[in-house]
Amino acid sequence: MEAPGKPRLLLLTMVALTGAAGFLTSTILLRLRVHATAWRYSISAVAAYGVFVGLIRLWMLAQRTRIAKAEVPPVSGPDGPAEPPKKRLPDWLE
Image (tube, rainbow, N blue to C red; front, side):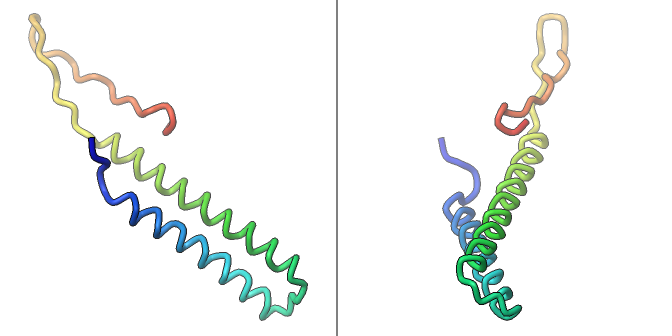
């Protein structure tokens, strides 16, 4: 079974954006004259973590809509065509 899409490229992009957000936050704080390294790096790490969580939520939303759009053909029974089964999302996406 093969995963749809390109998961390695997706994760590489997410990690690169997370690192860029942390670096950008640190650079902005330095230009705002926050010279205390501990404060600057702590704030940058929290900002990068927030970006990472946001990207994970966007990915989950995209997966949820992709699964919801999947077509399931109706099954015919001895009494004629049956109603299509209700689309159910995996537990980890609910």
